[in-house]
Length: 351
Image (cartoon, rainbow, N blue to C red):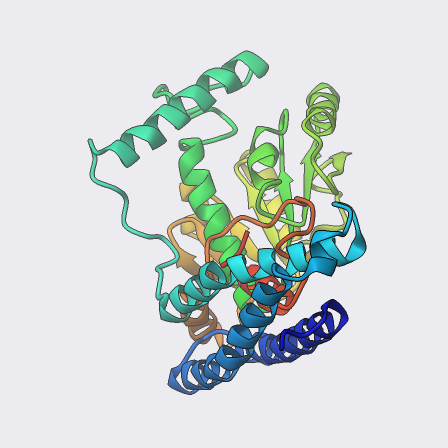
């Protein structure tokens, strides 16, 4: 005899509760680096989830034949509940596939560039060329100090796509260190073009700019694009006193000569141990060690790194590259899959 609708609801709720508890245990275990022990533990938990998933599917299918269910108005809470169960069941395979892929990932912080004339490389080149034109339009007076090639402005010494590679690597290292709401500061942000990019990666994205006109443009632009948690400081980098509030610092020659060295010393002196610094200029490559920094790769450094730096960098290879989630109605966040979705997002593997 088929259970009545209240009984089916209770069965579904019981199976959902069991699944949610299992996925909460998966979320606790899902902490990089994902070694053999962690993978085996999660595999066992997924096996435990299988009978509950099948029971939930079976109970959900029964409700379709219930006369009481068919008589419900379309917006009735009972009908909405069973629709939500179906939505979560449909999300299940993709969530497990994403989890399985994440457990296998060993992605370098700086993956090899794509083939020079392949579609991916050309798409990146097109992005950089377009960004270059937009930057020239927004900031026509920015000096091309050392570079004449497109993409090498006085305040951005390489294509925008390269800046994103450094910013993404910095974010993955932050997550590997347990900094899940990393804050970014651009020292000498100009009109804020790099902040637009960085705001998609970091929980807080601030800029420091000496020129009042540029600072005003940057503030207005960040407001227009709806960037969250952004402040533009109109201040002098040599007197700024809040470098220690950030997890990632970016500085490309906001000044020159002795002033630049003074700025470096002040910035590094205030920064917390383990702060990441993107400093894309050759002068810094000759003195970063004397200032207490370690090179991660290229122009990415860590200030006063811990002895566990090598372990942190190995862990970062397990952290994903997914962009931080944007609010989208809460579908993926509710139901029994919520702990898994939140854990995947926490470690860069979920949207």
